[in-house]
Each structure stands twice: as structure tokens, then as C-alpha cells.
Length: 339
Image (cartoon, rainbow, N blue to C red):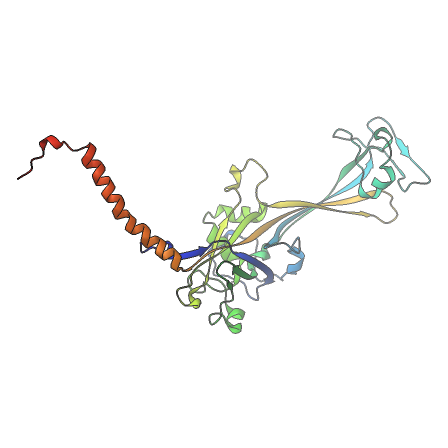
């Protein structure tokens, strides 16, 4: 009877909007307990431009921070396993003479530059092309992402009760405080700035996973939870941050492609060459998703009277149960009445 659900109505369907900015930290966190698990990272190294590692640049309530990049170069050439083939057409931009062996089954593979030219041709008339891998390949790691700072701003509305709040809580967060604070679950629980290094500490306790998260990428959720009692003062309505990993862990138990990654390509021609080249880029990242949930309650007279009526109805139910027991489970022959 004294529970909040007995005298309050609730709105559990918030509408939210989230914006995320990524900035480099002005200093390095050298006191973190997990820094020793990244021996190849040195805080004294010069910082990269953060914008080069936010791919894609815009997402809905999420951000992807690149941790590792593999670039492989390919060249598009005619595929022939028997003899030299020459494809020449004075009206065509495709003019290549080459001998190559296809290690895979031949197929009609048209790059974007030639799709319009051959789209109406039959399959047998289309050139049999293959992407041939060149020996040049590059691999890079972005350990500087450990000291990137996420600045999260979000607005939440509970339309049923007409409540609108944001995580920059009034009378709690001042401009000077935002400039110097970093989130800490105990000392700075309302600070909207999150260091990647601190997030990794909170979501993972296995030291073997830290390097693997940068190698394979990882999927991380930051959950902003609102639980407010509008019968109290509004200043007590504050967000609570929770952090968790969403990808399968540990990575060695994942039978599929572990972590978080995606592929992208760009095409170009080298000077004085007619062969089309492609840079095939595989990007591993920390894909961070921000979700907003909440529950807001407020006193309601109808809910209160309904709960009181239900509570009083329990006594009527008790009378019916007692009569039922007396009628079917009690031996009336053993009862004696004094006259």
C-alpha cells in the first residue's frame, strides 16, 4: 500500500535527443591502472587530429572512434589463365593489355567507372575482371584515442507528465566546472565529459581484453537513466550513467567476426597509367552508443483512491475465504453448542 505505484502515475516512454562531441584531452592520464597494458603508447607523443579518426563523421546518438586501420591496395586487370588478352575499343576508356592468373573463380566484376558503359551488354561480352592485391599494405593504430574526451549533451522529455530535462543540471553544473571536470562515478557523477580510458576501466576488468579491444574494435553502450519522483523538488531529478560492453567477450569465444569494424574503398588512377587502382580500407573502431531510458512518477488522486479501494476489498475477500473453509473443510458433527 505504501509503494510509489499505489499512489503515483508513471511515464516510462521518454523522448530524447543526443549530441556527442569528441575532443583531445589537454593532458594525459598517467595514473590510470590500465595504462601499463598499452606499452606502445606514450603520452609525450604528438597528438593526431581527432577529426581524422571519427568515421563516419555523423551518427544518430552514437560515435565511432577509429583504433586500427588496415589499407590494402588492389589493381583491376583482365583475368586470363591461358594466354594474353587484349581489350581495345576506340570508343571505350577501358584499354588494358595484361596477363594475370585469377586465383579465384572468374566473374564479371565491373567497377563504378565502367558500369554504365557495359550495363546493357550480355554477361559473356562483359570483360572478365579481377582485383589483384599489390604487395603494399599499411597498418596503423590510434592509441591516442585513450585520452579522447566525449562531451555528451542530451535532452529528454516525458510527454505524459510534461517534464523536460537535460543532463546539464541547473544549479549543479557551472561553466567553470565543465571546463575542468571529468566523469567519475563517485566524485563527479554529473559531469558530461567522459575519457575513453576511464570508460574502459569501468566496463572491463580482464587485462587481456584491453589490447584486444583496440585490435578488433568494440561495441560500447552508455546508458543515461532518469528516475525521478516529481513529488520531491525538481533538483533531485538527475541522470545516472551506466556503462557496458555489447560485443561478445572474450574475443576468442566469438565464432564470427569479433569486435566492431567496417570496410570502405576509394578508387584512383596513377599518373600515366590506365589501370584502375583501389585502396581497400578496413577500419576497427570503438563504436559507442548512447541510449536514454527513464521513469518519472507523480501523485495522482485517481490512482490513490483505486489503491485504497483495492486494499479495503481484501477484507471482503477474507470473509469469503473463511466461509468457504468453514463450509467444506470443517466437520460440523464435532461442534457443540451451549444452550
